[in-house]
Image (cartoon, rainbow, N blue to C red):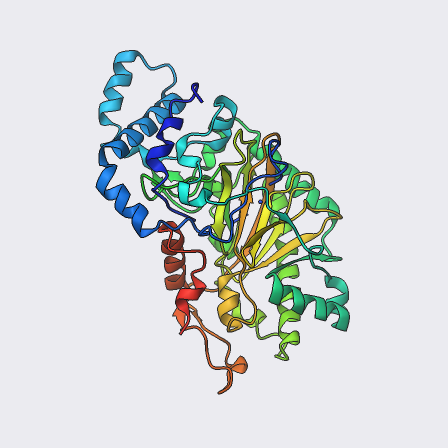
Amino acid sequence: RQQNPFLPLCSVLVVLSSVHCAHCRPAKSSGGAVQGSPGTEAGGRRGDSAAGLAEETLPSMRGDALRATSSLKRANNQGDRAPGSAKKHSRTSMADESWRLPNSVQQLAANMQEPPSQYLLREQELLGANLAGAEMPEPVPTIDLGLLSASNDPEEAAKLRSALQTWGFFQVSNHGMEASMMDSVFTASREFFQLPLEEKKKCSNLIDGKHFQVEGYGNDQVRTQDQRLDWSDRLHLRVEPEGGRNLDHWPTHPKSFRDDLHEYALKCKGIRDDILRAMPKILKLDADCLVNQFNSNAPTFARFNHFPPCPRPDLVLGIKPHADFPALTVLLMDNDVAGLQYLRDGTWYNVPAACDHTLLINIGLTMEIMTNGIFTGPMHRVVTNADKERISVAMFYGVDPEQEIGPMAHLLSEEQPAQYRKMKAKDLLVLHHEHYAGGRGPRIADTLKI
């Protein structure tokens, strides 16, 4: 700790909080990673007393914390500046809001023995916390998608219904995607993150090096100076509509990356449609009623996640607790390193590393509203690993931003009225981001109920 000048600032930041998908394995010291407890606000909500303490007693200490953050950025970005120029930069760093520019976590992991304070769990998040998580009480539900799609097999349909109503996620096997294609996408992902930083920055999500956009390589947007950051880097790309792809953000190295992603996206779309046709059948609805919700303007994003080894997996999360916004997520998980955890009944459960080339399917907020809460979008997070890096690839399937989202009419009756108010997808997305960025609690869906 003495080697890290930023750790003493933990006491400054423990009462400051913020928040915002996808996936690690047990830490060396605790046999696992890190877990939130029933009493922990999964989204990292800041309590009233904590907020008051921050406002009344910590203004000068907070300034010290921010100056230290600027020092970290100088160390990371300025390197060999002369002492005089470094001092000048220190006087102007707050004016140019350099705190908004997150560091490459991969670079931090390679050059620091302790995580900077911006990545550490806050005091209220640590109360009773155990990031190691618990083993799942039963194996992850696994659906034979080929059997379910071909014959609506009653046993597979029953397993799907149970998984959707108890966990909100499941694995699919026999999904029709070649193992070689999945391996190629995973290999291309790993090779991209192994590129030199300057090469990866050619796909940066910062315009002119400072203005954030969703697409590209980097991290999530830093909205506040006291925001707790995720121990992960990501590459976020629009895949559909195909005409909306911004190829400036699509890597040219490795050379196979673009072709691999294009082919993988086509296969994943077929898997998505098979699942969307199976879900209505267990609700006794028309098989195409969900597929028809996705028109030609429905967006699909691919997110490549990289979680470097972390020296403090007991205090740092790879991705903060959240529920997905899109209707459906298809996740390609690491075969060797676990890290994804789901929250159920106040306990965080570990999802084992992928095996036998299965894909993990996750329900999001949009689907929860469409099904009037019959299927629920689960809270999940990613923990870090002391020794190994971890990679995952998520495909997010949303609906047309201009489309109005609400419970499907065929599910409503006098006995089962609408549980959620209707709203345009683009407006709901804004609320979703504001909810998690503001640390307003674990589930936005609960705030949208009538």
